[in-house]
Length: 129
Image (cartoon, rainbow, N blue to C red):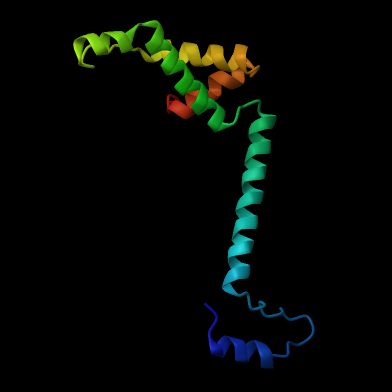
């Protein structure tokens, strides 16, 4: 936060040639705008780096995982069994089934290279050692 003393010092300070110039006063609105621009620039660089490495966007990975889980559950007939038994205690869905289906969705359905899809799933699920 800029104090009145800082403002007075900035207004009355005359630097000698070659000395550093005092930092200009930045109001809170300008500071927030700069922070947003910096964050947007950082995210653009992150997305470009991920794209250059052949990795899909994390939202796409999350979407594929959700779609894969729904597909595995539907194929196993779990909704009908839940309605019949009135319980979810019997549920048995393996991570292997979900990850396999997610790989198929990303590689075959979304044209993501297999290596990038595999690495994105491992990263997103925290399976890397």
